[in-house]
Amino acid sequence: MKLPKIGIVTQARTGSSRLPGKVLNQFCGVPLLQFQIDLIRTYNFEHIIVVATTTNHDDQKIVELCKQINTECFLGSENDVFDRYCSVAEYYKFDHIVRLTADNPLVSYSIINEAISSHLTNSPDLTSTRELVTDRTIKRHVPKGLSIDIINCKTLLSVDSEKLNKFEKEHVIPVFYNGKFQVNIIKQNFKYNDDLSIDTLDDFNRVQNFTKSLIKEDKLFEFLGYG
Image (cartoon, rainbow, N blue to C red; front, side, top):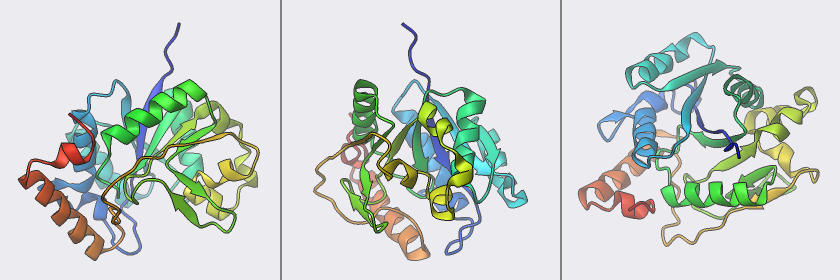
């Protein structure tokens, strides 16, 4: 039986409004994006890692970094992130995409591992660690910054993207919560519940200091459920 082709795709761009260029800022000694990719590679998943960036000239710096660290890089729409993922799915012929964002550097092995297993077993349209409520608020089942989504590419490519609104195009997963699709929710209990996502400079410094403390105490992989 042919095994499904899974891509681990992290979206990255330099044009953040609150912290421009954050994905290339030095985080624990390397660019933030590289830290995330190095971490994923440590887990030895047998899946292609792709950085989904944009055609904006400023994002050529991301393309150059990907070349340096020998990582696949795909250039797509800057504002229509949904279309960017569709283009990645078509280009690489993925059956499923594990969706990450480069401003969430601490990728959890235990969450990804459980999510992939559950996704392949239950065959939903989307597997996620969060639920989108009708008023667009998010109910999270893991700490912010550890969230992941796994998208069935057949479903992804079946969506008429021309009918999506700006919010749906930018955030990718909201359309899966319109009641027409099967969503599989992953829940894990974490003793640590603080925000680990990077949006501002204060976030960057806080998450970096937390990560450095885990590395110093040799507890980074324990925290991320690996080993």
